[in-house]
Figure 1 (cartoon, rainbow over the protein chains, first blue to last red):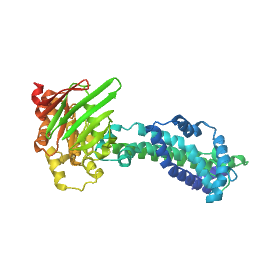
Figure 2: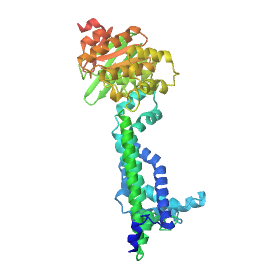
Figure 3: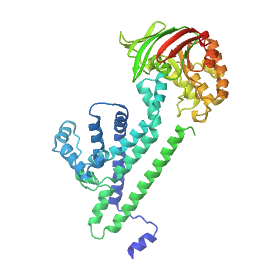
Length: 242
Length: 220
């Protein structure tokens, strides 16, 4: 009966401080992961779409690998390279004071890695769809490679860049396996929405509280989806002269 | 003055062409597949010849022997392509200004107004290319190429995608441009009537070779 009262009451959502911390942390991790991986995503997409080089298949395979690997495996691989006592992790900690293991920044890494293939794929497709003759026209008008990229390629690929960023954001928001393997499930530091839901479900009687977070997750994801649709449609309309 | 002497193998097609052009308008004339666009792309810097030389006003743009190959964006050669190739994400005004921005030229309200007036595109400035007719698009493309103040203007079948009525709508603008004589023109076409109206001299191409070069009487 208590549950019914709560739903009928003034507030459907009744989150604890720890729940809110997990929500805000998830948003922060997903945002930082998306923003930081975007320049790399664009660069790799451009490389894969435009340049033929030796070992390209290997680069493609590595970029797309997190898409097909079990997330736990990706998390494990991150742990044995970036962990506090792992080679790269120890080097970064000793020389730059940068530690990823069991920190929210480590969650940014795992979410970024997991979301990267989706981002690259969306951007790559939109770059491949660009009429390269427009870039030729720009170069006859005096645009060097950088200006050509900034004024022609990037604006024309913008709908794909937006779609890729939003996909990556949504993927990062929902990331679970790699993150919990790499940085564990520490409330206030690495406990994201997904991890918090998982934790609550392990507790007897925690289902109702888990449902609260599930609703929040659905709302955030829907908002991201609608925002990306709207942005992409606007960007496309701009390209076609509305 | 432009001097072209180039060699290019493209799959099974072999181009071997040498000719010179003076000021005024010169036509590259020949059936499709003759290699006209290939030559244009090599002059513009969009395609690299296997061998040869391309020299404009004494400056080599390409020299196979001396390893000179100026990239397209440093050549200052204006191009108008068959499909216009206006930038769809920019207004007509920004399309027109693009070459000046990229070439680092200062704004000259007078020359802008002059070109806009010459091509009668003043009423289109705030539109997007997607909202233009085929004829309007080609006039804007000519204006865009002119406003970068090129030392040579390449028109690659600029009317081929248009119907007869649109063609006759644009031809007078091209004649005005030629009569101004401010920039030498190379006009690519497979249509003898068009060539006679625009060009003073003709280079006849077929199967990647120059058959003849001389005055438009060649077409008779």
